[in-house]
Image (cartoon, rainbow, N blue to C red; front, top):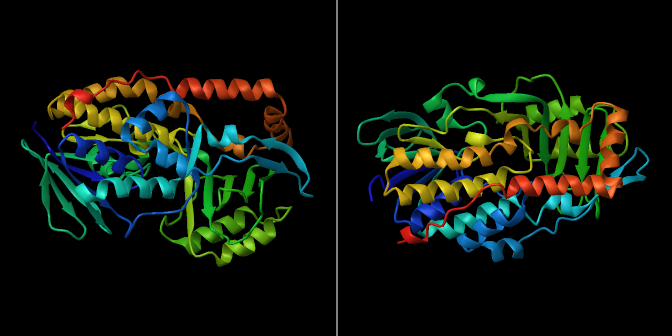
Length: 385
């Protein structure tokens, strides 16, 4: 085995999932994460279909994921008076099994931390590929050389920017923004969603943070300035009905806000030399419903191909792309913004009808299951340590 010293950028889902497999195959893994610690909490994520379940089972975490699942509860769409218009069933929002992003991140971290070096509060500043490795400099730590570097650092990937080029060359804005805010308000069960044209807010239920989606032109803002993001939300939701004024009062007092654009990544190749992209950095589509499944399955394939190729990164990266690009096509063209925040009353009614008529919902579930299982998984047991 060669090229066994691997640096992964990103400690959310894709990075630790990859670390899990690489450790089992005998690689030495370092994970660097800009945040000072694990980012816990956040919205629920879900897994769909036999492919996702198979990978979780082979990882040995399926039972733990089920133990920590949120339940995939129903959500009511209400009007301005709080009257129920329709119900989004839990099987649509929660897939086969639903878990908060924070719980999944912690589970993967706990499984890998004993055999993996985690470096929090630091970030890569440069990547220089040589004949024998990649020389890496960091904001805080001393420079080091690794055999391979993996960008598993999200849709705004630092590794992709350093290795492939500016973000604007690969990330396409989809005309909407979203936010997650821990408001401290209790709306009980079931969760409730309220729409006005181009705006949506969802509260309550197992997805604890208040969830916002709104249509907008591209905004200029600091991704790390929570107070600025609160003001942007306040302007976007000014004058909205139902209980939104009460929610926005709580937003102003919230300690943390996660605010970002709905965007998708379009890139011609996942790798360049000794550098490779995984998860949202390579095939992200915000709120598309497949991001976590793609990250976990992608980690399984990438690690397995590296092990099967004896560490030959050229062969492994090519096979990872050959297998995975057709599977990741689900993230290519979808846009959840118009579905979550329809732009007119007529479009809102049309979206609601989807959940009133069982055959439409059944068709949507059948299509998503097809996409989630559209890959033939190889077994890499023969290369286990």
